[in-house]
Length: 387
Image (tube, rainbow, N blue to C red; front, top):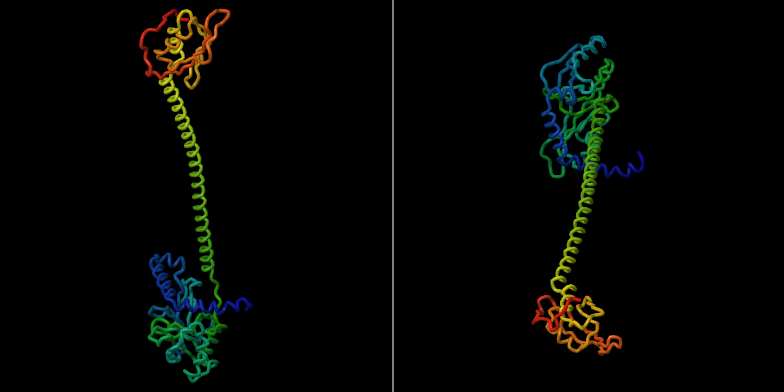
């Protein structure tokens, strides 16, 4: 045993002791029995219904075979027959039983057994054989090396911190000759027990070195099937995760596409709002600004025939500039007082006479009216032809 195993042994012993003292083993035993009982009998037989125990007893000079839990003798033969004949009789009694499930127990009579009741500490559950050897001198007239013994836990009331157990022993001079005879006959047994009605008591006095070694192909198959089931479950979980990831990736792609479409819609909405704002601005500007055509028409109607314009300007602030020549420029301010398009018109700079034409050169500055603010208060002072 390695040092690592030795260091872990106390921990393993504590875990094993805690497991055995817990109600879980009894629960799982009950649960497994209930599940097995729910299965049809054919399935139980096909997949292994557990060990099939046969009880081998020596009655005088005759051997008898019974099935555990059932009445009646399956086979019997005399011990003075040839070993081959006894083997045939024994094999005929076990015919039809799966070799993997077959278990044979040599059952002794109660008179040949020695039984003692014990109350042992809870901590002794994992070392019953050692406790049995220790208690042998105290409970029986034999020493441990003179008997074959076993200790089993039994149901019963016990003091606090202890559990009920039973020591079962048989002298070696009684059991060993029977084991030697069975080896001569070629009959392999799995346990040495005591007959208890139609069944066995539940102990095993067979020495460990004489225990039969059986192959367990079904157990290996069940182990392989269990491993395959675990692998399949793992693969199913991985497939489930893969499907979830694929669905998530697909949903993410759809969300990204929808997000792009939403951004396009938001961009179109913003563009529509901008266009609507620009259109509203133009509409508002058109509603609250005098058009250049109206201004030109009004100025043309109001200028006298002996005056003309050299330049007409209008900026974004609504300021209007009139530059030209007239015979009497001072009267032009009065001409535009009633203008529906221009207000607050005044001269800017000085009035000078043009030496070429002999007329006065003027420059008038005014402010455009908003539509509806100013209305014509009469006909133009000097109506004339359109220029």
